[in-house]
Amino acid sequence: MKYSSDAVEKAIHELSKLPGIGRKTAQRHVFYLLKQTEHEVHQLAEALLELKSKVIHCHTCFNITETDPCRICSSDKRDRSIICVVEEANDVLALEKTGEYRGLYHVLGGALSPLDGIGPDDLRIKELLNRLDGVNEIIVATNPNTEGEATAIYLSKLIKPMGVKMTRIARGIPVGADLEYTDEITLARAIEGRLEY
Figure 1 (cartoon, helix red, strand yellow):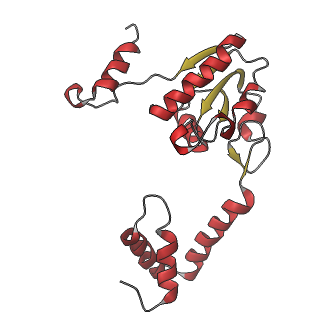
Figure 2: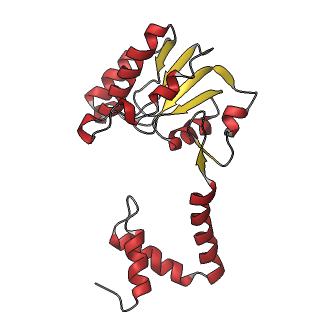
Figure 3: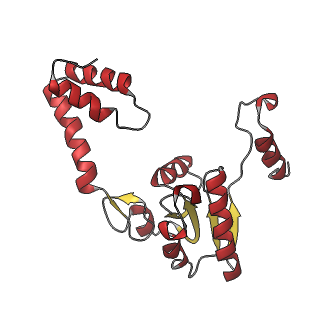
């Protein structure tokens, strides 16, 4: 159904381009915004414009930032002998929320996926290799899917011969899950990655 207002229709069309938002959800968001004050809608519009005008990639780790180098790379409180390799910048945020990791990061910008035409030259692998001086350990924190595993194996084959320790984040059963509903691959990985009690 098209609305009599071109502005409403355009807003629904643009919002429905966002991942996970179909036309109905976009429509709900547009009607919510219509109920907001003009000031609140302007604040949202300004925040979206600032995303494109202020946010850049750190030239060291390729995390998103407004300063170059980013706060993590420029901090003297970080352990510079460890680099955690992730696929995307939002993975850095997820790991930082834990408060457990105190090393540096490297954002690849994706994962190897030959079917999608993404090869090693499409990722920031060369830049990672250029950062290995003084690094004792690389923690590979790519996603536990086919592409993430392929990327982890590829990195391991490149970096291990250089004498740098390679580790992979543990995978297993989430807290609160029932064993009977857990898939076989996850159970197998949980058994492989068991720890001494």
